[in-house]
Each structure stands twice: as C-alpha cells, then as structure tokens.
Image: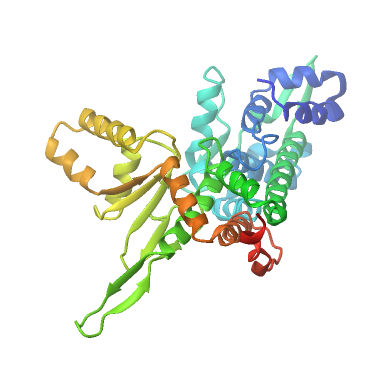
Length: 378
C-alpha cells in the first residue's frame, strides 16, 4: 500500500538505514502495519485517525527504548511494563485522552493478525496474572544482508510524525472554522454542510450534529408542571454527555426536560444498535446515523438483520420499538436549514469551534461574540 504519508515513512527509514531502507520497508511486518494505520495522515481533519492501536505500539516501544533494551539486549529478562503506566502514558498523547484498554489487551494483536496471517509473532505480549506487558522483540529486529537492525527508534519517529500530521490537520480545521466567520453566508452554509457528509471523521460528524440539533431543539417550547395552575414554559435543551466515541453507555446527547437519549453512529450493524438499547434498559433512543440512505431504508436494514439473527418476532418488535427516531444526513441537513432560517448560523459555528477545541484538546481562548454578526454577512 502506498499513500501520501508513505513518503514520510520512507524518508525516516532512509535517514536511519540508508540504502537498506527499501528492504526494511518491504520486509518488516511492523513497518507495513504502521504504513496501513497512517494512511489518514494526509487526508485532513475530516478523516478518521488511527490512534488506539498505534498508541499501544508506541507506549510499549517507548518503554523498551527508555530502558535501553535496544542496546543491552536484555529484554527477555525484563519484568514487563505495568498496565497503569502504559495506560497513563497513552492518555497523555495527542488525541489519547479518552482511549480505553482494548488495544493493549487484544485489539491491536487481532488487527495485526488480520493483516499478516502468516506472521509467526503477535506484537503485544501480556501476563494476565501480573498485568505486565512487553512488545515482541522479534518484530523490532530485522536481519538484512547478514546484519541485525533494531527498528524501535524508527517506530517512535514514524508515530511521532503521524501525530504531528494529525495535530496539524485539526489545528488547521479549527483555525479554518474560526476564520470562516468572514465568509459570506452561502459559503459558510456550504462549509458546515460539508462537515456532515458520510466521509467525514466520526468525531467531527458528532460535533456538528450536536451543534445543529442543539439550536434546532432550542427553538421548540414545552409547557409542563406538577400543578394545573403552575404550568411553565421551557425551551428544549440538548446536552452533550461527554467526549465523542467515549464508552458512555450508549448516550451521546440527552435532552431536557423530555429526557430523550441520542446516540450517534456510522454503522448499520444491528448488534451495535441493540447493544446500545440493552445498555439503557430498553429506554427509547434516537439514532443519528452518518448515512445518506433514507430513514426507511436504514430502518428496513436494521429490521432485516434483526429478523435474521432473532427467530422470535416479538423480540425484534420489542427492540425496534425502542428506536424512537432515526436522523440521517438528509434529515440533519433539513434541520440545519430550518435553524439557519431562525438566525442561528453563527451560534452553530461557534458551537462547532467550542466542541472541536474540547474534543481535540486544543487550548486556545476564543470569544463567542466574534460569531454574533455572521447572520448579517450576506
């Protein structure tokens, strides 16, 4: 596989291994794996990053280097890295703040085996009793022309370069969002519409979906009360429950005072939908789906998968009744158009900038008042 970031990988290998760099690239399964996982580096902020499995490799190889095992050759005697130290280090890395333990425990190994079925080695070694971890040194060492070469330093440099590329892409995205306040209204509308296309990064889709729906529902009023003569009016308020793609029990947004739950997803896998429903004890949930397929098509696909998996119609019916609403990309764009007509274009852009900075740990103050005059820039 060759992609834009492959050039950077080859440059790093050439600087370290000279004329042998092409052989290192072609003969090392680990280098090939990094090449596969870094293909999104040059695709900008809208493409999904591959941080979890890369960071599992990174923290273990970093631990290996910090103890100079690449020089001493005594890695086989090492007691192993403690999970707590590795996990803490993962979350210190850019975009790693919400990573879970899955990559370290099994996902990275499973994915590696999927790509390299004939390889004799699994990358991450673990002792379940002590919860200690090692990186398989057989994958860090390669023999070329009778000489043994250690890839550990090159691995760290490649992942560092990928981090910088993705950080740069997200910084440019945020800066572009900030600078877009100078765009004419039609151009700004087109820009925000482009952020909910099915090809965008899942995190950006979730952020933009939330920003649109927050102001869409904010214009709707509810009258309620505990006593007939004390009825009060309240706007519907949508709250984001945490970071995107987080392990939060299947709730991405929650609405007050109705208590509606929203889950953002990019898949139409019935197992994922029903798992989310089970997590919240079959409470009604609205799915915001990153798809341009019609709502009817999406619902039919979920139903057909469910009927194939479950032979009892009552079970399928019970689960399907828990899907309160499906919001696909066309529905989301219609709601965006309504919200723009109601004068919230600047609010939506400000919310996108705010949530993006939180999500991507981009620490930089900004003044929300800068966006207040966008509606007048026809």
